[in-house]
Amino acid sequence: MHESSLPLAVTMGDPSGIGPEIVARLFLRRPGARRWMAVGDPRVMADALSRLGAAGRVRRIDHSAEARHEPGILDVLASSRLQSLPPVGQVCAESGRAAYAAILAAIGLARGGQVAGLVTAPIHKEALAAAGLAYPGHTEILAEHSGGARVAMMLANDEIRTVLVTIHCALSEAIRRSDFPAQMAAIRLAHEAGRSLGIDAPRVAVAGLNPHAGEGGLFGDEEIRIIRPAVEAARAEGIDASGPWPGDTVFMQARRGRFDVVVAQYHDQGLIPVKYMGLKKGVNVTLGLPFVRTSPDHGTAFDIAGRGLADPSSLETAFDYAEKLIARRSGGRRPVPRPADSALRL
Image (cartoon, rainbow, N blue to C red; front, side, top):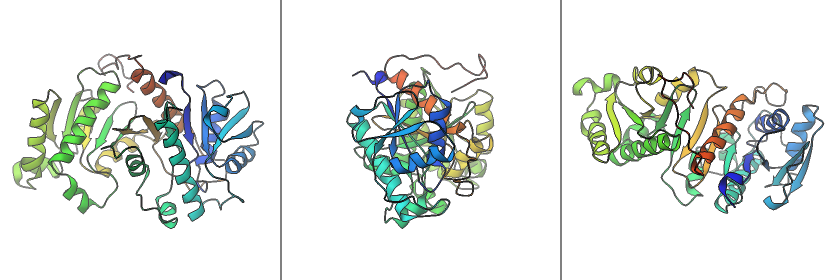
């Protein structure tokens, strides 16, 4: 079956957080959306719909082929069968295990060619740890269970895109991990990300690690020893890479249209600019996987879980982004306009 005709899988996230609610809201707000199925616990998803006072109902399925995509019915592929609902708004080992099971089931569907890609609702790192699962987050789970691919995280909104050299680790560890191979992997993935978005020759800006990109070695020499040689090596491969650029101005330059993708050295350097611009339109894309995966640009929001206050906008944006990426992978490539042509960017 052609990839573009396959459904999407949307995981429920941590059952104790807002994941089930925003998935339920996606179902209610997008009745005419592309065919998709939820992956998670049917009892949890039925409760999420009930809390919203929704007329729709859940149908538990055990295989993707059983999904009927009928109006008013949310197909939920059962990755777990909880005997009772987990507590809402607090770290729970049972929720961590259920969230993990949903991710593994969805990966299995994608690797087996049963779905075109994944959209994942938020999980809680402490819940994973409480369940004895030593993963810092989705990205590491996806990498390990998708053939050991070298992956990277890209955060994007309407104006900027950023790819991270290092992800979930202490800042001191991020500095150690920002070696030449890590730089090259991130630059190449950023280039491929731009290509997957329809940009024929993506302009990749690489941020420096130190203040003012090291100021010629005065504030650190990683830019001289590692980052600049990686940029030069990438350019020798035909990638339109430049840098290292000061981290405090490179995102402003990207917003003004000078760059298509920014490679950030560590988690907060790349995510603060995206999240500062608002969570509703931010999307997390995992690069380097054999299938499409996107997720919202926010966490489990335990403080509002179960209160009917969760906003599904970022999940909807992630859903739309996944559809566009799948369409382009399937040959329906449409060039992404430069900022000079349009203020709207993927």
